[in-house]
Length: 82
Image: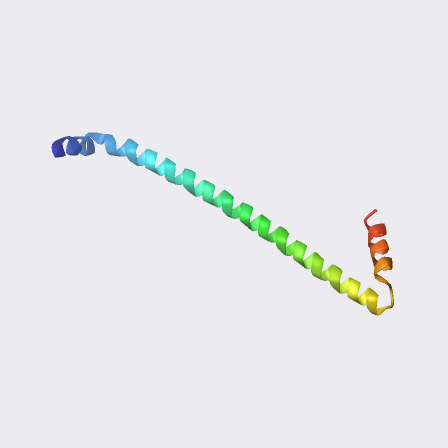
């Protein structure tokens, strides 16, 4: 058995084996890179959403301080989105 393994190693089988292992490694790395990019885009979208919500709350508080009622604020927001 050991002699068979040595014959395979010395006989030149190691080159195609290394090529297959290298290709498998590149495939796994590519999948990891794609997942990292998708995670980054999802995080960016979450941060943008949280910032928009914070800004909207601050604007609503300011409008309440100016004396507008919550109904007026909601109607104004609805008009802005139409």
